[in-house]
Image (cartoon, rainbow, N blue to C red):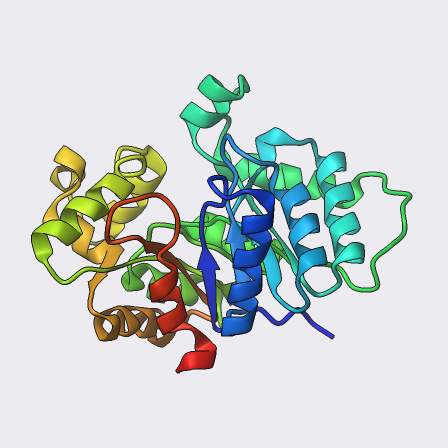
Length: 294
């Protein structure tokens, strides 16, 4: 059977949870009918160890890295991870790969950050040819790429199962679908916040966006969709905040998710910010948006 990711998933940081709390959270998502839990990688837990643990604690939820940094592991190691989790969690694992950002690669990890497209292409080719002598999974786990601009989107469509764009409006989803064609998976992330007061909503949104709005990868992508350099100043303009974070009541948030589907997304993974500004996902909102409750 092919991997079924569902139409709606959840993208969230899990590092603030204990291991049992993380398992309980995944079990709730499974009960609510979400298809996939997307787990990022930065300076916290190893996502692959966590996925192995969570897969053993659940029955049907798919787990994806959103994304794993290709500078963190060589191609042979990534191939072994891909094969191993594909075998141990059949049809429940997606290997999401990305080139990350220069400051994380060079300043934090101590590697030389190279041309993203060439680096990703070379890494995929090296993975394909790498030696692996373990048990083969019955079916290869899908691979997706963190792709934003056209050439990386094309690589995602031709060399992997599809793309997982982050920090994008529905206009990007429409463009990505056009570039990748009808068959590749398109799985954008969408930030959501249930807060109807504009001042409060934008303050919480800016607090969550501050780590992203200054990064060249995201800026260069968003400049293609009507944003200007001024939109990235002072934590992000109202226009930028409103386009990237779907805030408002539940129906307004649903409308933004629907906009991605209408633009060609196969799967939307939502990152639910808490209205009190505290870290962690807003589980009340996730419960209300859950596929099994709509």
